[in-house]
Image 1 (cartoon, rainbow, N blue to C red):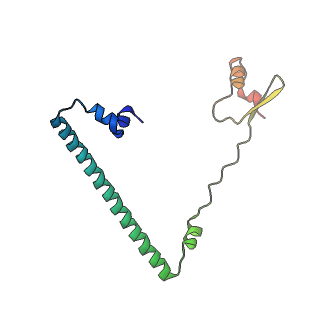
Image 2: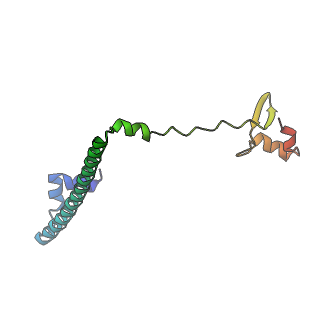
Length: 130
């Protein structure tokens, strides 16, 4: 929590912080806080009204479903889509042996350093085809 909020929410610390303010400054501060409080209350009322409207719509849909003979389980089975299948990994197209270790590459994505070093030495990618 920030220092400001700690002071604002702690009674004695808040009183000490505003000790040097004049009465007019305190009233102005109170007015500003009241304005913020009323704005927050209005926002909360708007959210509650929206939720009440949403809940009313949900109840209306439930009544319609009951009239037709559907249940939520019927909707759940229809709404669940299978996860998209991942494609199979591509087969390796190039291979190279380095210090007894075989390194393969599909030819897509960033070229492994060992292939790049060999190309810099004058070899071609055809030399590494599987």
